[in-house]
Length: 220
Image 1 (cartoon, one colour):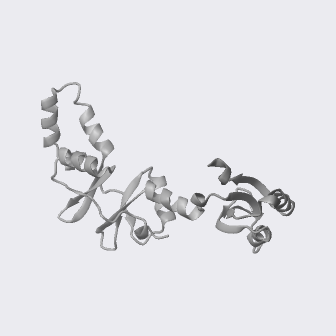
Image 2 (cartoon, one colour; image 1 turned 90 degrees about the horizontal axis):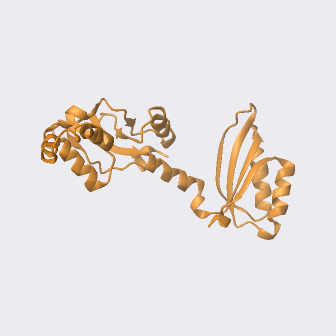
Image 3 (spheres, helix red, strand yellow; image 1 turned 90 degrees about the vertical axis):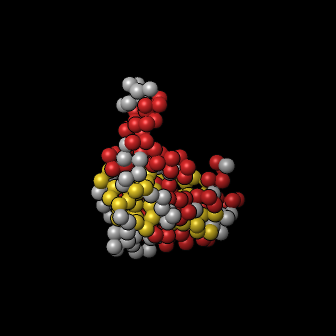
């Protein structure tokens, strides 16, 4: 899951000498929240819709509307942008990108290639799309959550039981548990034998630690 396969490649940007009004117009037109700021083809900053609101809000109560509009047209992007913005390398994976956005409390960031050129923009929404796709939640089905021993074959043991009940595996997610020696495992399945579903649950509980079972088809 590489960033380059999920980012927005058609990047809308502004020049460092453009006005705040220019940036606001682009953000409204393209319904985006951030604009990379370029100077001579190089990334020098980023400006967000929040930056624009913050830059104009303090003047609203003290200026007449025509004065405010003039002020906005005169303020340069360079005056309000964030310099040296956090960027994400083009060859990073989605999980690495998510970690960077989380650590820096960002909703999105420019993606740059080996030469520092802007290749795209990755946002929280893009990462949500990956999550939805790879968890298979759109396919509904049933999600089983387990606490399993962190050893070879532990996931296969429970998945084999599911297959014996006609279940088709949609996705398997796994991560370290807070308890040493165990893993949290989330398996989504569909097409299980509904008449034997309770029997399946009981067999899984007898062979493993089932944390919860959610039938997503009953939520629609």
